[in-house]
Image (cartoon, rainbow, N blue to C red; front, side, top):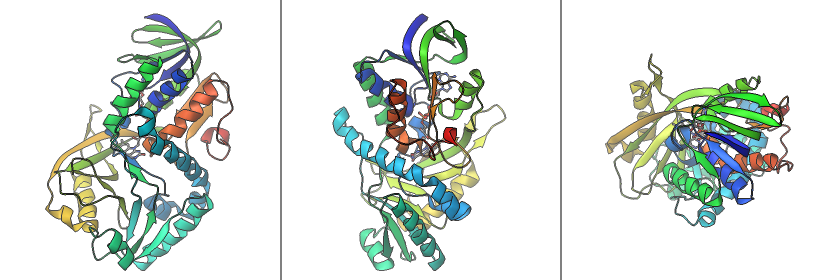
Length: 379
Ligand SMILES: Cc1cc2nc3c(=O)[nH]c(=O)nc-3n(C[C@H](O)[C@H](O)[C@H](O)COP(=O)(O)OP(=O)(O)OC[C@H]3O[C@@H](n4cnc5c(N)ncnc54)[C@H](O)[C@@H]3O)c2cc1C
């Protein structure tokens, strides 16, 4: 392969594919390079939650100062969610996307106080969270444990099927004219006259602009141009149960333990929430039985019907994480011909807006959102 493209995207996860689609639709000459298969890392293996609210466990652990610093991310996620809701019609495809809202259930008065405090900061970012007493909570979500004392309800949140999303996006990007090369790992970036040579396992591609959408491996791409990026992979696991009759329309979280829970189109309940998987000595990820037991325990406490459901399958993947949860988004300060498009932890939810920003910058436009205060690159 000895080719050229005006814009090269490194990474065929949801961010890379969405960016490729935006760029190709707008007439750019764009090529996407993916080391393995499209969506084979976090983007195809995630839990499919479309989050908006401040995550309760992090709010409890890091406090209000952290949450205030996170506020620009909420505004960003709100805009991303608006793009998500339009996406099925835009793509003309069923993505199993549903937006019935997210509920954080509480078990103590102290947890309710925290949900209230969290809601105040969310409101400052224009994100409304309704505070529900026990009766109203159980009326709206009768599947929850009667031991719940109340909760917070964030109406815009939802879910989509990550595998469908990846397949549909890949088709849409290719139909719009993006060139997509899978099994093509980038191993180096060399400055050449008029741009860069992107060195891959299948040859070189010459380009003027590069978008780093390599997710958990983005630090290695940064290192290729001499930039240190504070992002790395964290091993996570998710589990799905056997199909149950229609029970849970919402995205469900608990204030008493890490949980994200939803029922998908075939009736299975997808249970996760940031429980760690284990990395074997050979680097392969495997499910951690302690995480599995802990995660199922929290889920069954929140939704008692799940105590009788069999878990069918657990899977693992590396999530892209930054220490304070803020994205690395924008032009590289030293090498502006590279644009980093990295939204950590909830990158599925944030992908449409992350891709929009990356595409606009690559086209020479200004970012549609303020990056100062949002992106770690602009501190
Ligand atoms: C188990 C799990 C559950 C999650 N649940 C949720 C959720 O419910 N909601 C949510 O919002 N987020 C969730 N996330 C996070 C979310 O999945 C990620 O933040 C998001 O998918 C990141 O997308 P991406 O396109 O940036 O990166 P990725 O999906 O990681 O894609 C990056 C791509 O770059 C490729 N690549 C890397 N290095 C190279 C190279 N040198 N050359 C070429 N290609 C390369 C990789 O092969 C990969 O395909 C979850 C993550 C995990 C792991």
